[in-house]
Image (tube, rainbow over all chains, first blue to last red; front, side, top):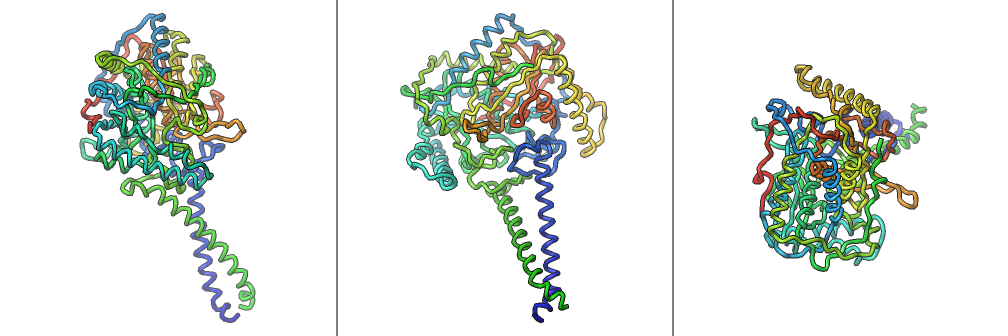
Length: 300
Length: 300
């Protein structure tokens, strides 16, 4: 007991240090949690962010958008110095507009995600035009933060398939371990991606999270993920317009490996992988329906 | 000293509890940091996330994608139970494809972000078809996580303008305080958004971060931001196809206020605000250029 008594001041000192450290780490966790939830207290978020009171958390990705130039994408300071030119596009009569809107909807409504892709070759210039079209997308501060890597080389396609399937297998196995034990065979079907070998083209879409300014400094590309996703939407319409099919995929965890394989710089991150070609003769799609207009639109 | 001695067991017990709590909180912080940086040690990230070893950090938004069903968007478990139907879309001859790809590119390349919008009325059914077309977008696990709020009511448009301009002014002023002192008038021009009052329609695009399962449980919508952005890309092509203009904007911080104004539920977050109409007669656009194909595409 005497031994313990002599230790007491030491124990008390340690206790104080530990309490201080604990409270500090707790405070930090709390301030993060507050920053993450202050705008929307009713929504749970697993992502904690540093405090940025005036940046909408809805719009954050892994890019720091603290100093976002503007909400209005094309009004960058670069652009303010540009001369303005008059813009007078074609104006259609109302019945033509109605007709055009209807027939474009009909064409786009036939688009489906297709996993059965024919090895038939597709003219290279068609793919080039499709990517030119995707490049007309708007982007935050007109940064055009996209890079489309078109792969037709069989060897590279095989390597891509290997990387994607390997990661997919890990994904599925880990998910099973986490969540439920299930028929392995069912999942195996999911991580085999034959089309990655078969499709005449793989389009790997990278988002450029930053660029280089003329003065050599790094320039953050705000909203790069949203911008590149919009350009992918335009790309999908361009593919559908020429009768080509694809399936929108976002390979988990493969980004860094595929980036290195394709020798892309570190400021580019893989956002999507799209195999492109004609549908194979026996192609099937799940018999799913789309939401009716009243479920996706309200008019005020 | 005797008093302290009798306290020692109590102090030791408290010490143990505190140490355990402290170590637990420290462990959690460490595993977050590891998860946030393990894939790309060279890239700085301000966002720390819980440990998710197999989820690509490139693809994280504020939605928890821990249990993402798949990378291949339409292969949700729901869909696996769906019967498959054959898919035989129209196949065009190669010269037709080339011609179609060229003329679609020409049309889309005429699209510009336009801030000078005519108050002329636009047929409602055209807007409905444009939104139907946006609704054909692919989405993670076919969740269709979008809601398009079409506002033509003048009073609501005024309220939207007020909310957006108020927040914009705060954004600009704070940015100035943060970064540099500059001509106030230059920025004022940026936070005045006349088109919000003038355009016949405002389209407010919401992403649904989650939905409700038939059993009443919450269902996370994986990749909802990417999905909705893709659908916005399709929407832009549909607008361009009928000769209407818009400007892609992502109003900072206005999301919650606008959501409440429009009476949208808490699982919906504002992603974009698009004023839509004909360009006004004197409309101008900055004389900017797009990157040439060789700067956005590589072929392997």
